[in-house]
Image (cartoon, rainbow, N blue to C red; front, side, top):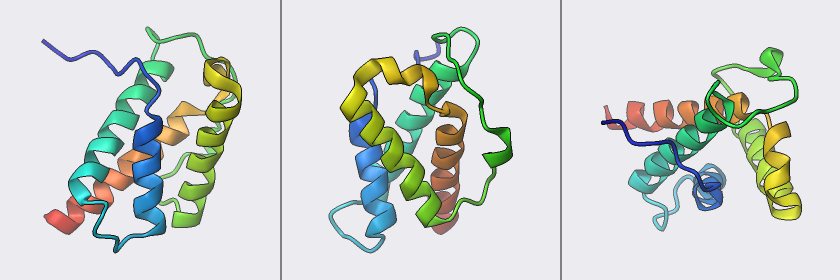
Length: 117
């Protein structure tokens, strides 16, 4: 049986990922926690964006969807989401471009899997 997608916004996971991007050599943020956080964020984002998830609005911003975000782009997008949710709460979920967030989290997974492989 498959596990359901996370139902609570993964604010902690975004913080872990942001910390690792900003401080890549920090020993207080081990790679296992970063990978788990990316997995959590991917699940949350997919749960928001897939057809059986909540109805979302807004443009998925396909022209921004890519697989090679710079660290600065990742920080900017993730901080924007983090700040929007912190200031506006759950009502903002419907306008966040979750597909972009999922794409960033996948890139984080790929980055660290390559280092381990």
